[in-house]
Image (cartoon, rainbow, N blue to C red; front, side, top):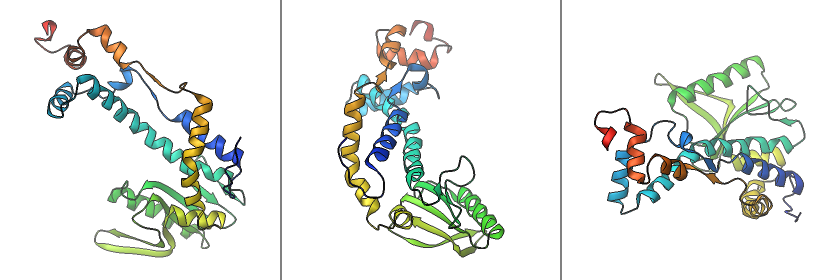
Length: 245
């Protein structure tokens, strides 16, 4: 194993964590998964004609889009579970808050992007944190955002029914600032981002193509050799007039 020299996590731990995330990362899709929410063949037809693409290209793009839904969750897994290796009292509970340090009374909810929570979700999360600081006067609760609007560690202000609520014990923190809190290195997150492509290259070299399998096209071909016909029959096979489509 090559030396990654991150300083705040061992070479073996970061390699295994990236590998575990890659193995979770969805590169497999079959026709059942592709059509889980019923594909819209009319939209795919418009996409192909308007953008000057073949139907095969449009279906391939749709496969990637479908897989991307679950992969966003796996990226969340990557960010959250890295702190299993932090030591010094940091843990990743199976329920409750996403990351916790009981000794330092720090309780964290993590989000990948600053705009992923609507107003109702923000209020619910804020109330969860309010409840925690009522029960523990020393508690510091943090909403940690990987992709924040800027580097920050500030009081989180929430508006409920046009009334603003804020408490210095409830913070809104960008991931770089959280890495500094956890690891004591202000550049720790930047070091990870710089090294991540190399680690991924090493992991994928070990795994090869064992994580990639797409059977959508072969399964569509069983319906009809004509991919457009297959897509329409997939969605509309019980509709009137489609028995001779």
